Length: 230
Image (tube, rainbow, N blue to C red):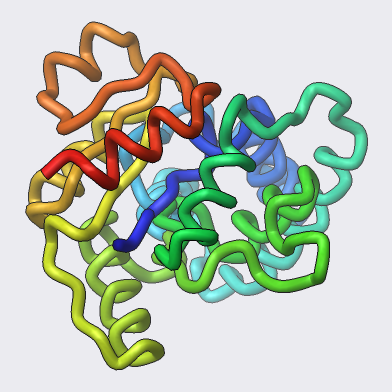
């Protein structure tokens, strides 16, 4: 079984660190203050978000690599000074249970891959105590314009690495947002909604996930329900 994890609001909390880092990067490179203020941020992969900001302000999109480098630098600085960033309840244990039972933990996020790595490193979730990667693959927001496309690419990566194709119902997508649930349902995967993010619980439940948990604090029960419910 493959466990695809969203980051913000599912694995961890770090507030609006990513948005703040992007705004600082745009201000540094282009002198554009509040670059994201009038741009819709939610339910969009980061590459789409960046395209919107460049277009909204008439900026030179050829400098995207410079922007991403500045973003990464600012994100590190912001997270280093953030005493409130944290791993969410039950996450470490559920990751351990999944890996210990031979399942694959992977990322599925709208974040740029660099941003995902920096966030996870900041709370000790990128590698384990032995320095091994916690996540064996990932779908990111660098070039895939929809989350289901990022998931499909990550599944292909996993199949190439393992030599095994996984049926959709053996794939679990855990997330705190409607975009995560829509992605799972589009791909025919199991959708696990967790109420630790910003989406109202009533909206998550109404979207019809296979499972809903207020949080993942009872990791053993969560694991058993996901793995052994057919």
